[in-house]
Length: 315
Image 1 (cartoon, rainbow, N blue to C red):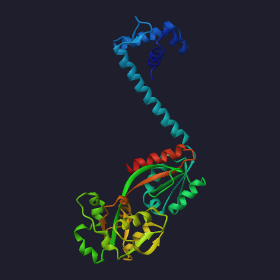
Image 2 (cartoon, rainbow, N blue to C red):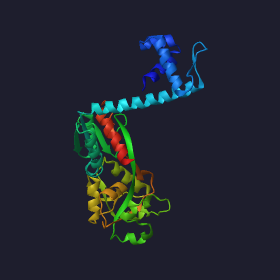
Image 3 (tube, one colour):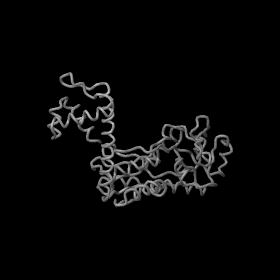
Image 4 (tube, rainbow, N blue to C red):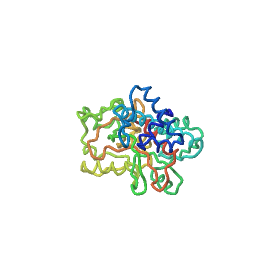
């Protein structure tokens, strides 16, 4: 900001030329001369000198408004530069379940290490339930997840929303009954399952089928059971597994029906995967993907920047 702007702003704050001159460690005549020069430059008087204390003219109000905007921009710049300076070193430990670590975190990590090469970033892959325990032991800073957590111990930043669909092996005879409502992977990728006019299968019709579920304690285990119970049955489970990616691959082998998220369908499964999908109209069918961090842990600049980049990536 120009020196004359600082001088004018100081007079505006103090409503006194003499006090402003003392604060600025210059003489009052020098201050007055500098402000007169600025007024000649804009073609208007900034201060009404006929009042005590002095007041702004209408032109002066516009001038001060512009100065405050310039000051805000300068503060933001200083803040950003300070953040960059403080990120020449440091460390951040980011964690996620295998699917998130393999499929969703790579672009976030790529951007982060490109912007802040001086920060040591470590990625931890594990079962999501174990990650929260490690975070409370101070071994993990940020958890990329879509499950459940203790809100009294963790805070979270929502990144995006995902939706649950019923996935059925394509050779299952029931698919003929609901052919009008079934979706291909390509249709899921276009968001067809989110359209209100897209049909859905009667989930209760699959009550006699074998289901693949995540183990107890996983958010998708609870949601899958809730969906089935509201449909009037308890699923007959053939396998309990630890990773949603494993559930998807087992379903592709025809080992049972399962519930998958559109994120898994989009990022893990490929064209021609032997599954068909049905939208699920149930309160448990939507959930957030988020970054969680322990409340007791002080948020560092590296953590803040990683969260910011994650938001940018999934906006």
